[in-house]
Image 1 (cartoon, rainbow, N blue to C red):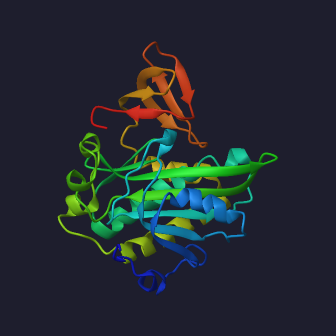
Image 2: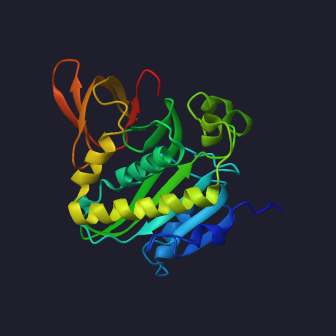
Image 3: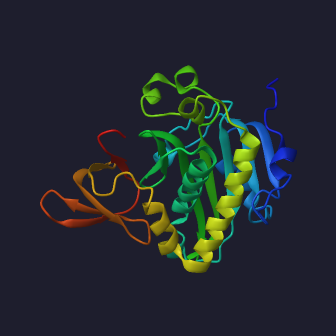
Length: 267
């Protein structure tokens, strides 16, 4: 049997968040915290409920890509019930990325960058990914599940497939030591609640504006790839709804939103 590594009492003792993390559904192993989060919304799970797992067997990233979730990482999802129009909820992915970036810089003194739309980078490599999934009804948000996958206490070369090790890193690798998962999770929940409340009070433009301060790709030539096309250009901006503003090689300006992957020289 897998030995439990996370102490929930340490997470909730001293937790400054009012809603996030007050209810935690914990699993040593689960297929996907996002999938389970979506299920429990139908049973009345309150806003701020966390689904937390030590490992996932079928974790997902964008485009349905598999997200490998070995022991030692932080794999959790937060249930949100914002009273928003569907168009006003598109920036919630940036909420997660901003919170993670701020916490990592403040706790560990590392230089963090973000990559559109859902990655957090250390030294040009992915340390965290965010997967946001929404349920809509009559153009209003029913609920949102924000999944966070943070590579913490493991060495990618030892536990991840070889094809991923060139693009992935972990806190243990970057810091040279393991970190306290309970304290890190507690700080993430507190910061995410703060950013979320700011999002509700001031709108997505404020949060996206803060997120852009960490953006590694703005002002650089990038490649944007989807299932059906591939375009290159200069990354000019990210607008208030989270769309990427790209200046194409022919000079045309294009607003890009949806299921795309951004590639730069190093990422």
